[in-house]
Length: 246
Ligand code: NAP
Image 1: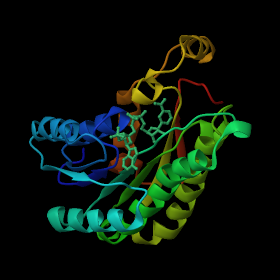
Image 2: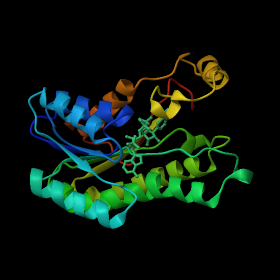
Image 3: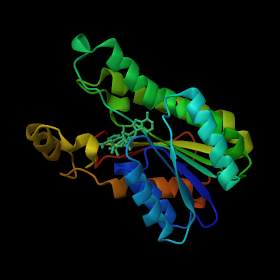
């Protein structure tokens, strides 16, 4: 479905980003795997992707840093040529009630989750515009649509991502680049691994499909948005949430 395309995925050494990178590779895309923490994990994803017969490279990059992300995007464009797909997946949480939230925790989440999307989109844009059918996919969250207690920073960052998605869709449409967001609900990953059991039980009871989602279920939506099957969809937010937010 993505044969011959090149996809850049941030936060691709773990969780949802890893699954997106591997699903894209399984569907024929070459993948640039962006990580920040553990190079070994990123190399493991590279090897798994290469198992599908595609080109895969790893790049260390703090997406929150404007200059570092610029130089990494330049390296990727030089290594792969035209980039067709950018998945802005990297994200962090620093949860706490607004009244107790520190300025540092607010700024850190905005810097990675929102400014990181701006940095990567801006620096990758020339290459994506050359694609002729470019795709930008931003991983938002249902928290950015409905808010969430304890997530003032996170929900604001993800609401910002949704606004940025719609503006990017309008500004890049003339270059045949679409930009859409995926808003996952409650997905099994490192990010949700340490939640109190009571929170997990509550979610499992209240989500209409009565379970948490998997990273693969989010990755399936990303592959659809990256493919020609989504050619007339732009500025959209697709929820992958088991019916949690409706
Ligand atoms: P995760 O495993 O913690 O993935 C987050 C990834 O982002 C990690 O690979 C992390 O790298 C990377 N990252 C963090 N800061 C970065 C930075 N400054 N520069 C580059 N990469 C950075 O959690 P996940 O659940 O897969 O999250 C993926 C995305 O889905 C996030 O945007 C998250 O907000 C969103 N989401 C998740 C859920 C959920 O329930 N899990 C729900 C809604 C939305 P390191 O691990 O090396 O730090």
